[in-house]
Image 1: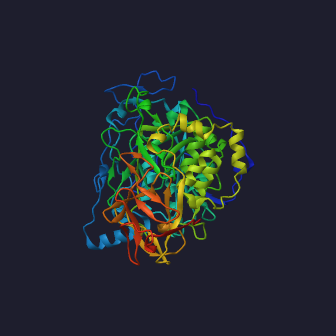
Image 2: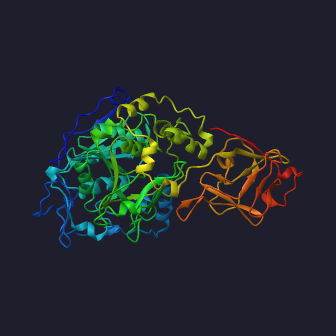
Image 3: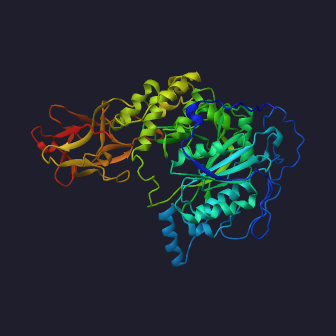
Length: 586
């Protein structure tokens, strides 16, 4: 057995946890849990297959079910079975369902109608059924971490049921439910009692204050008894045979960050669908403002695959679902403790895994359904927390891991340059101790499609608030409207947001990931990326002498009255066509 358990690398900064926790646990056990009506849950059958797996490499047996595939899955009659959706028709239920969407981001009324033990849709490629993985004694054990704050009851509990029902009991060491200081007593009082049915397999951990999603995962990882920490969101459903493929990658290389393929579960009906169609293989990259993106894997990676269902390497991942050896995670410093709440943690972990001697793989035959939230109106942001925390997180990633390439993040997000990101000394020292590679090495050897998909952002010629000279209290404004809409003007407020623009030396006029283009006499926004590629050039020039913004496409200048923004014939003496740019920092 190649898998070796390493001693936890000790760093005083990362061994200490400033957040007190209370736990409700008992010694881990894999006794089958009983439903209230004394029914046994589905257990993954592991038939004997006479195949040599002594070297831990998975073996394909086309036409013969793999060793962790269930021989038979008994359907559970009722709404939502097989990953189908539930559509509410009763007017009162629809009203209650809408209220639950506003509260949780998904329809808890529809969810409540679905069995906690429903079988999801098998979204895996058919070939996945014929892989044979190492036997349980050769694989590391897993601790599944579920973090939540005021989560909907049935979606949370169905996640627990799903993990147990689809995982070989010998491999599932425990499930750690980390309650990030929920206010809802329906959860805080009911869940610790409910999980007793699993005799210690499921543990409840509650923080003494809100610490946010990222650091709550670290709390869960410290409480984990398994060799591998598997992070899932608390509104997921696992597809058949999802766990052995992940654990196999870590058994083969303990420094692997293994990522399942994430399916979509609709927030309104809870219908489970595959996100990828036509057999496409995608991997994670990003644009330079740290917006997560995906692209089809390059030919260089595809050519390495003997079978299309083999795992493949990726520069980064979406962040919510992953598996990593616990000791390796803490050798890397866990998550940076000053990356708080949410945002940027997937880049921090991905960059340092790759740059410090590990690898990140997407595991094609491991699928997990995830509810992507709908129009929730309730804010989950911790009271008193920094409103710009996600930007602080991104700045810390850029400062610690991106070397000279930090400037390109700031070209894309210039307003973030003055944010207080705290002390980075400890994590820079960690990077040096681990003898990590440069960010240039990472781009050249791992994220090598970036120059084609997302070239380095050119310098900004001007950026910030755009104030009109004639209408001195009027600024250009996107109004927060979606792509394809006109931009306009409104009263200047000096706070960035919808009034923050960039115009680079190559003529691109943009805001966030929207690029502005002339459309007749109007100016509309569109995605900067077209057909999977960003070309950071545009039609605009700014004249520092006349203060005019000119479109080379229509040979007109940007003008404003008190109500709208439009293009008009350029007139050097027109103060309505003159714009003053004010750099505006968060």
